[in-house]
Length: 288
Image 1 (cartoon, rainbow, N blue to C red):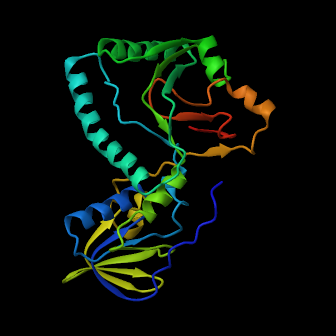
Image 2: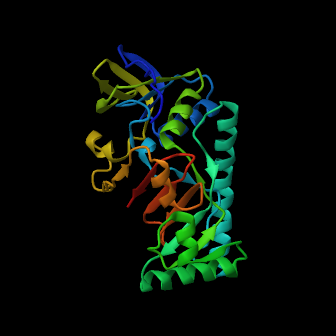
Image 3: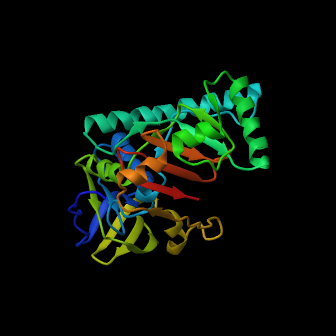
């Protein structure tokens, strides 16, 4: 779905560095960027086992927001959400600034979100969420079945809550762009899986197929693969979710996706997501 890309070279020699980051997803790239800001003279490398845009960061549901909806209609809940929003908004502002400064094209567009319920129990849960939005003065719209169907093309849901809080984007394009936006002082190696980590008297030694890396500090940002390197063995549980992408849709098929150019639909809780892309994208997908 994206244009071809030339990967960065794989590690092919022994190295001695100050910081080695294992994993070039959103977390790994953020760590490398922040280390460079804090210590501009440091020697920093990022080791990615595969190709940028082929891992979990590129295959998530592709939505983001700077706003946190309070969990409860209480002062404590509202204050907690306010603090979380302030923190997330700082990251969101950095992201949008980076997209602008580095001309990263990831099809980011604000579409809002629909939290929808299909069952009686789901509706009861959603009405509690609606009450939270009302009590906290959060702008929202309550959608009936027909209104949801008009926007999404689906008459499955009986009640919905629309909040103008969500952006959709192409996550694979985003992670590619963030990798290319790394400082020139940070060296990224793709297709360079770390096979083993050993503690030494002066730091750490990383074994890869192409060479050995001696590092003063190591950051593990390879998610569910961390236990394979001997860490967090009893603290991580890997969960796999799967999605489907259709063929390019024709006009007749696009007409079944509702009148909204793009939409995002969630259950009353945020455990899963269905995202619809209207005529401007020509594809639809869902994860659960």
